[in-house]
Image (cartoon, rainbow, N blue to C red; front, side, top):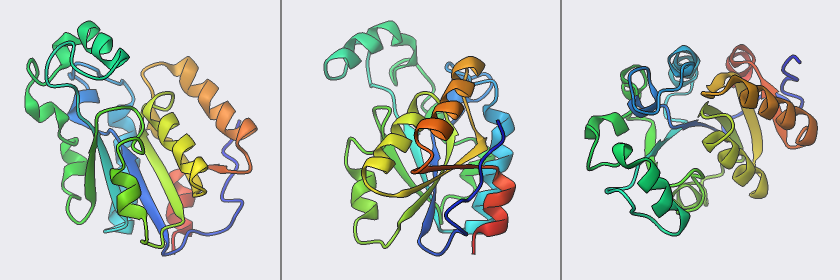
Length: 202
């Protein structure tokens, strides 16, 4: 199914590009490599160049040690002990080099769970800012992007999802989530191609 477009009109000065987890951790050669991550990074660069300071980047920070974290996260990091900070190169948490050069002026916020909303840093940044629209890109479509989108909807933001700038390690669930966004959230999520975002961000 084709992207549905910016049905609520052009993007304005109250828009923010929110980039999710485009880090070396998920790049080719990383311990959680997402095959499409490198491909969609080009789309991120296009948005970053156009929007300059209107960018925020979330980076996923794993637990410090195996078995650390609240509740089921402790079990998660027993399973993924080799991806804790104790066992990986700390530089893997950094942004992919092609995107890191946009920081600053882009702002970065760390998170330790899938959602960027849970720990309060994103709310704190946006409260009182006048931002009413979030253009969301990054990975993975069916994990952290999903958590970002749902939290954005709950807070009443206009959500614009750049479909050719999101990716997943599983094609089947990537496609299923795109269908979900388009069919069940069509009043609250606009699914568009990057080209349309760039042409209509004024």
